Amino acid sequence: MTRYADLGRTPLEQRTLNAVLQRALDEAPDAVAVRDPHRSMTYAELWAAASRLAGGFRAAGVQRGDRVAMLLGNHIDNVLTWVALSAIGAIEVPVNSNYRREMLSYIVNNSKARLAVVDRGLLGQLQEVSDDLAHLESVILHGPVDDGPAAFRGPRAPRLLEFTELAGHAPTDPAVIDPWDLVAIMYTSGTTGRSKGVLCPHAHAWTHASGVGTTEPGDTRYVVLPQFHIAGQWGGVYRAFLAGATAYVAPGFHVSTFWEEIRAAGATTTQLVGTMAAFLAAQDPRPAEADNPLREIHMIPVVPDVAAFAQRFGVSVASGFGNTEIGTVIAKTDAVRQPGLGVVRKGYVARVVDENDVEVATGEVGEFVVRADLPWTTMAGYLDEPEKTTEVLRNGWLHSGDGVYQDEQGHYYFADRVDDAIRRRGENVSSLEVELHVNAHPAVLESAVVAVPSEHLEDEIKAVVVLRKPAEVSEEELYLFLADRLPYFMVPRYVEICAELPKTPTAKVRKSRLREEGVADAWDSTAAGFLASRSGVTTPAQKS
Image (cartoon, rainbow, N blue to C red; front, side, top):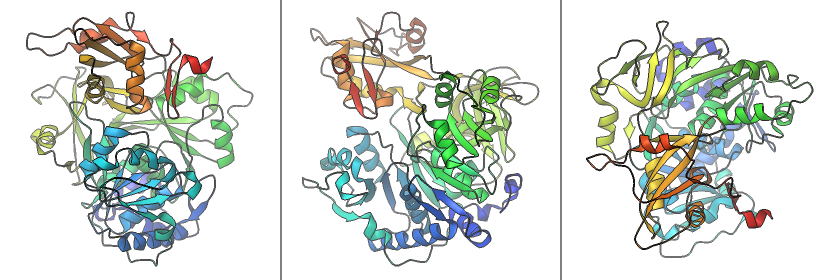
């Protein structure tokens, strides 16, 4: 297989998932392509299984260009699903498995997915909103029958199919796929509105997957990030496929057992968000911590003392910078020695500009904008949002929304967010999306949500709330109201009730002031003994 250093010479027409897997099948069919704690598949076995599942999809009515929602955990069948959809030219719509209620129904409806593949253990989340799903016709259930009930009620109840039946279908021939064909609609948290569906061509997915790190044939890439994000799917599994290496798909991240799992998997490379690395660094030192098979960690963002981290665990650290719309545009192979975010990858041109798209001086903060040398290697736009697409793709540049500056040597440094996005627990959070749910409480008149510093490298969330007169509600009640409706990572840690929000003369909320005020006057859910997690909410009464 082609080594990492040769990937930049891959012509545009070969930058499709089907072409990558076909090449692996030709050159190393017996190499292990993907593993999880229960199963393993070679490249030949993966392609044969994907061809059968693709035949099942076609029999279920999936045609080229159809959107298929995926509400799945991290396992081999998740990988098999998006590979099979790509094989027939269908478009995957990965859905965050923590989404519930209105956020879940919004994405399924917005994507116009007529079919969804769902883990039985997650089916209850879809059942909650079944009456609101305007387009969904069929649900393919994945997993053992005893994982959960399989029934829908109401006028819009979709038909139910079994994953095992589709996976056992006669194989079908793959479609002819071009690099400009869409492979996925990836939903990214909106910074000025609702979550937006990013239209991702095959060449865009390929270029993101080739972005950072030195995974090579013979490596095992440990994939602990979720497959519903580009970091887990493209930066993890697809990155391994590009090198003809093995992707080990782990069900989740567990700080206390991480290194034992790395050793058991024989993992040589992995990708972590900065909070995960910070949690590992915060653990009490153990004997022989550097005695592990990991050679490299791709970390975004890097922990403050990255040199100490690398030495303690005996690894090199690579990093990168980008987003769903632009892919990984900035990269650095040695985060210990290379400053800042890194330098722009070959194949891209970047600038730092002011609000009028005029380039600023070296060292001055501006917005990071980019354009690619080859077509279709960044997003094709936002689904059904031409105005937002035009806004982001204005003047021939793709605008990232991130404030950066550049030094004389070409290294970029992150300064601040241009918008109101929040980064928490490895997820991008839209402040407006959280505000919509805060404002849904009948006692709330208006609210503002901002990022505040966290002890864990990224952000915490503060909600500042103005109540209706004469309504009353406690901070604890608001917290529980939100925890019942939002994914755990979007639930504000801090709630502050005030008489009014600070505003400009044009009635815009001065969020900068709310950030500057910090959390001294806010109710702290953590200090009060509340904790929102994937498994639900823990209250002080439950702890006692």
